[in-house]
Image 1 (tube, rainbow over the protein chains, first blue to last red):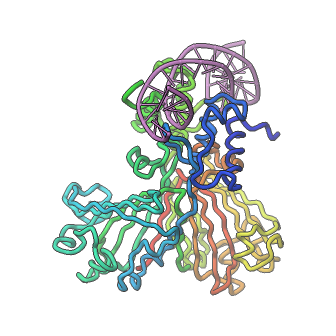
Image 2 (image 1 turned 60 degrees about the horizontal axis):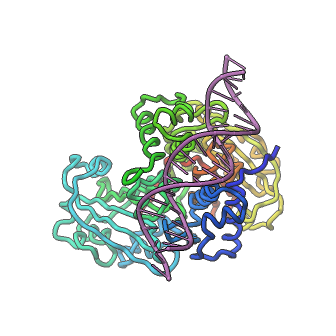
Image 3 (image 1 turned 90 degrees about the vertical axis):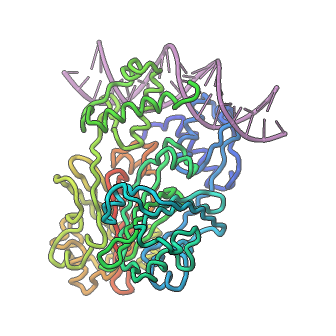
Length: 247
Length: 247
DNA sequence: GAGTGGTCTAGACCACTCC
DNA sequence: GAGTGGTCTAGACCACTCT
């Protein structure tokens, strides 16, 4: 019944053991394709395929010309609704600071007016293509890009406020909206697993081929009005999401 | 092949267009590897690789010896907390009936006592390996297996109740727990994207190599007490999850 | 028996990195 | 320049399905 594993998977399993056992530590370089091929008695194309498996599993990263390295894989825990509680942003805390995980964090922000994508226009109740404020961010944790996020807000809510600045101030954009009497009262998040677009794969340093991202689209509502749409693309291996809710 | 996309991805893109344009309809058989190779002027191993890409994207399914076919890919929408509202199960509705999606549904149930896995024992507050009631289910939608789920409950809450039967009765196990004064009051769901285990890949009819599942672990609490742990494994391409919550 | 997907070999060339 | 990952060829054999 239990037929034999194909050679490439057998090799992948051996290498995976070395990684999980810590024999190949985080950041360590794996043997080269030619060395793996020689060591396990297979063609180099099979060694390549074995590494494809590990890359898909998010265990290793390859840099052409430089080698293949063991990746970091402790997941960041992202807990809702805690991270988005009013009490937090009213006290000036940032949303991401609620997420667990390694220490070093960086955020790059790019701000500008963009034509509203369809999924944004529909939610905000404006014409598709009409200008909206876009806040594109890139989250880096310990030198690893883990998330891309773009917030879209109606320009009439952002003009002349700190939302238009890279540093939106204490409590972030929700605190700024609250100052206008539009504090978000509830959120809806929509989660989809999919293959990354080529540019997303590049930005997140993922393999173009086998890897996956989680796309989270969040709609922030102040009463009946949708005041923000946030499209996030997460490295699927870097996160663990939790949601708590009443029955 | 300097400068541009590699050949296998070029071929994959062409085939993807044929599928998304509807030229290759749902359920249609793709050309064979040898025919693709001939038609696009590449080696058969490159045709194989192109199909690997489409399989990873969840667009096609291959059956060795039989061919490669276009997959169905309308996502089922699974909305929380709506689907788990007390009002629903108290009225006798089933949780899954809240999820949108195609019509034909089947559920296979296997019930039995099993030793508690660690993540279950910890939550239920019992010794690891102590017996718990397991309800393993398999959800089939329009001939496609979309989800595997296993619920674990303390045996003292299930003995002699309909929870021990494949059909747990109107409102499901939560209605049965409510009858004992242990109606779940809140839930926590933990979501992780990962590669399927070999047996999960087989059961969900996924490629062993590139594909991904969403693992959702739900903890049902009645007051402070955890009364159920439910480990679900979803075909990542078959679902879209939504969560609504207050700020 | 013809056709199919899955696996594999033993080479090859390219662009790239590191020294 | 040596080494690396990435891509590709042109074959091959196997187990399987379909008729």
